Image 1: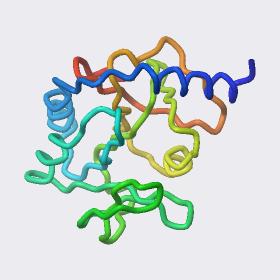
Image 2: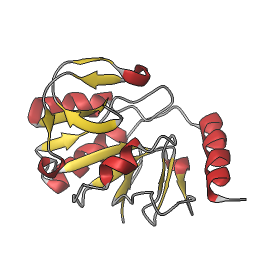
Image 3: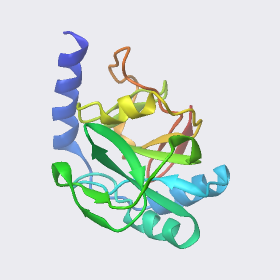
Length: 173
């Protein structure tokens, strides 16, 4: 089976098996933000079935600068500001974009991740293309514990993460 087919099969399998409990995730993410001393944090509004970042996003908004992704001309960028429903029915910010170099901590969505730094996204490549220009060493995928796999299929264009956050642990890579 080629890598693209393996990724598609894995996406379908994980989507059907996603657990629903994000209990403990807030504490893990708070610890990560404190450990990295982050003041400019890129997060996202989770889709149904993804780990719940809302409590963390609310906490960050009170103590640091919180940025959310949006798609502009098929490119991902991060900005502050009120959120509205945007492309792909995902909540997007309306404010000015921030340079990726100003972000201290970047949280990325994933269907799965492995301890080699590979992550499985939804397959559109927005984060992979954006991460090409990101020099940060604090790029963490947020997944459920069952989605930390031994090996996630990857291709040369897939960009690596530096860590994984689950409701029960923080894995540095």
